[in-house]
Length: 420
Image 1 (tube, rainbow, N blue to C red):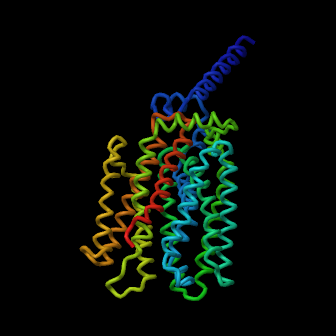
Image 2: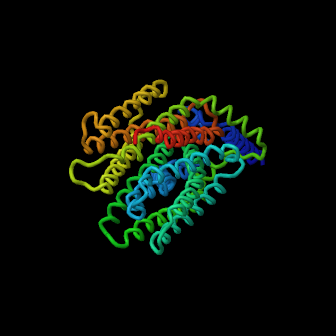
Image 3: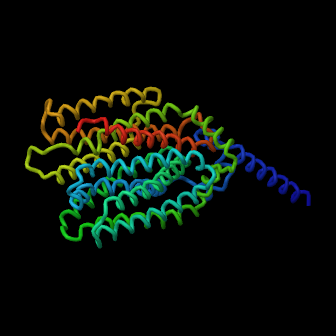
């Protein structure tokens, strides 16, 4: 009897210590070797393995990130398609980007007031379902009737609104899983551009029926992401991370949290804003004004420029998984250096020097490469910032993404200031 009581006491003490270790662990503890050792000794090994963030998890976030801007890249890569549908509209290349970017960025900004009022799952499911509906519309409407440009813009704006919500939700969700998952989600943003560019080239080679193929792929991508999220959010790992996501119906409390977190990550917010302002001022509207010296038609010039941008953006974002330079303290330097791209683009397009579309193709690639690399560093450094508590990571990642989107908004308006 005495031996039995001693074992019970030992088990109780062990359980208490394990519970205490779990309840007092925080984000810093998971990166501390001593704390990690204590945690692993006090938890079941099989359970510890099941909650490990694996490369498979990172690939899931690559898919989620790909879905976020898939509609935007679908429209950007189909600018030449819409130019053929509406040959009398000379500003359609600029307007396609402008309508989406303005609607998207305004929604993202306004979502500050309600983002923590709803759960991650509620925001994701609502957004992805609406994107599926709009994707289905574009699959059918331009292919079965004589489309109206205003209707095209209206449904593009609807897609942009829910993309704004999906963007913040996905990047905040990825932030809960650490820097690598944030990087993969950000890489997915660019992978959608590469994928849509490839699909657009293939559809152009198909000739008749290109719209059915091109917009059909967009619907399939959204449907796949929807199904993937259903299964992933039910896993133990996802459930554990979602518990660090805060919701509140108290508006004043939410705004106070926003202010507190912004004080910790404001530098990444500003850098992301500057990065995307530079990029979206030059691409796609201004860059696609290039006239080919090598006999290419305007629609192929647009396709090549867009494809070069998408490839550079993806490579730049993916590089941050292995290379992180410079460190957070000096990240502002390359962001300011990127202002030189205004000179490099203008001297060619305005006929000052290097009057060759090949120059613009390469400048577009490097514009996208640096944009993708440095803005992803902003997101990754935010997700791994030691200044943030575990329950602040999602909000911090959301705010860094907000800076990115406000940069897109500013760049879309600054296109009006560029030479015609």
